[in-house]
Image 1 (cartoon, rainbow, N blue to C red):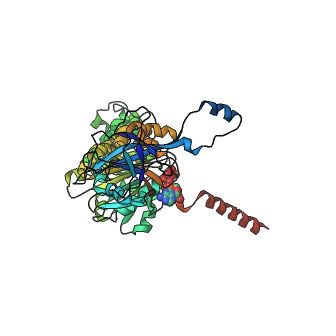
Image 2 (cartoon, protein in one colour):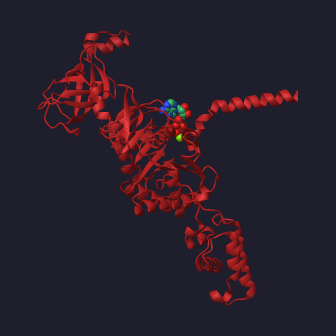
Image 3 (cartoon, rainbow, N blue to C red):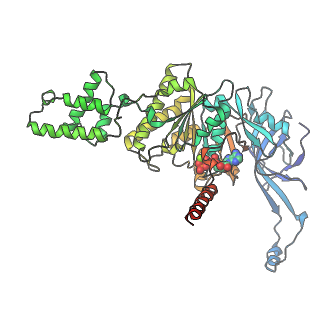
Length: 507
Ligand SMILES: Nc1ncnc2c1ncn2[C@@H]1O[C@H](COP(=O)(O)OP(=O)(O)OP(=O)(O)O)[C@@H](O)[C@H]1O
Ligand SMILES: [Mg+2]
């Protein structure tokens, strides 16, 4: 590796030289930027030991009279008097088997530092094996950055970034490419706003199916207590007892839970059955209450709709999108149905070694909220969903179910889920508050690299990369989210045109 351009030497203001972090004093005319890779030669075997630049700053000798001159507006423009420093931290060196090892021997002071050339960087950025896909390019070297699929399933993935930084574009493009890998990866997408429907145009209706969330609802799988809880009744109340008895009747008849079936079952329940020995008109009052509740219930379906089985659908297509965009104030039911579906998928994966998929949660905070920070729906249904998501986050990978979480706010997503998924992280620009949270998970060096990224660019780190260190990536979009089809401006253009049209016809 003698081909690298020499950029400078290690340097220390205190006279002490470490190996995990080095300061490079750049030779005149040489440049480095944050995120660049440099290397020194291994003191024992000469292999390149790679370091990543996290900070570049000019250093100028302090002169006492400078302050006085500046107050007069006079700048001493003496190039000879300043130098460029770069701080870089160690990635390590690659041994003969392609494994990354840390340097453990000290470097002598003022060791030569070289810019890492393309082929060296490529050795660190291309994952082994063929089961991988393209994420984008590293803007400094223009090299392709690829992600290995095995680690993205085994160790999950977190895609984060502030509003409009390109999270959904990244996620949807990753899905499209992974679904075209060999073998193709299967996806179950929990899509809050219908953003993923553009996948159908890209991959075709044979590969992608979009299903409204309510079609997955399995009324028979709901514990009886949940029906009683929907109406806020105590188990010992007569109305609750009548409802439970009616559910038992349906269960005994192996009939599905629908409003019509339940009404029929309620009619069969008799006071004697339940040991009710008060007046008959009082019984009628309770019964009427139950019927009323059934009629207005949001949990009990009207008729016998065919319930879709997510596992079956995933066996038939590459991508199943569960569309949650319908029904605004029904988060309690949505949580319940998402929990049912994820349990079913995970249950199948546990039993069937020939089944697997990646579960993608768009806006993960709606499904796995951090307690006390973000709350939606009802405590009980939310808790049930969170428990299955946590289970997938911790045990899913080893059983063929990977979890990809897309989120805008790190602090709002439950800690275990974030930490598990952060084994692979694709981080777009973040708000300062979330940078602090990220530093707790990933360390300060990672957070410093993020700085202010333009939309579509991200810092990537994780087991899916060959190296275990962050790389800057310009994500190559393959598919755009449905929302990007209408920009805010195009909406106002439409409104202005319509208004002009109305005005013209009125004249
Ligand atoms: N990799 C990319 N290449 C080119 N343009 C991109 C890329 N990523 C995002 N964009 C642009 O930025 C816009 C916003 O992207 P996107 O909707 O993916 O962001 P988001 O972070 O998911 O936003 P939100 O916070 O609203 O969900 C897109 O409409 C697109 O125009
Ligand atoms: Mg989005």
